[in-house]
Figure 1 (cartoon, rainbow, N blue to C red):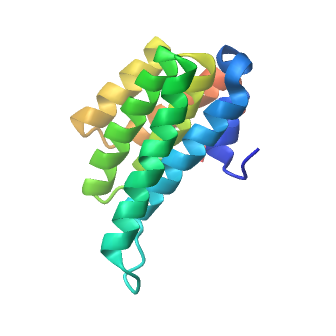
Figure 2: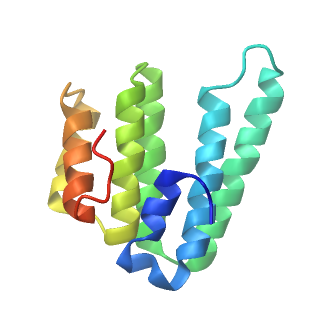
Figure 3: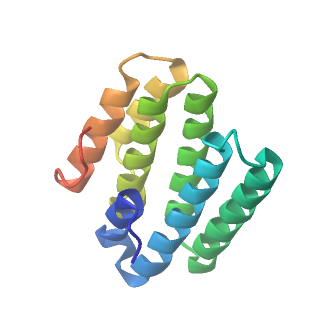
Length: 147
């Protein structure tokens, strides 16, 4: 298992119990891709980091697709979209909240509260990160960190 707490959170959820290790590996790879895209070392080769990030994204998405878990795939797509928007806005807190809420959605399934929190994030609501974290804690029974 990975050392990534977000990937581990998703893998603990009951709806992925038949393929938890694959889900954890997939999310770990996609998070590595995101890290490479959004936190590329300015002293390193930015183009190489982006290419390696693309490869990590592709690896993670491919692994998840192999499970046939359409809910997990849709949840991960939501996370990727929200984190891209959050990074574009320079909001690291929102980006991490989107990951944690997405892990809850992948592992336990989406809820109306999660869908509503994502809508708040898309509308630019300044309380969206708090709403995403609250939804994650509600879904996971407080396993989410609640940062």
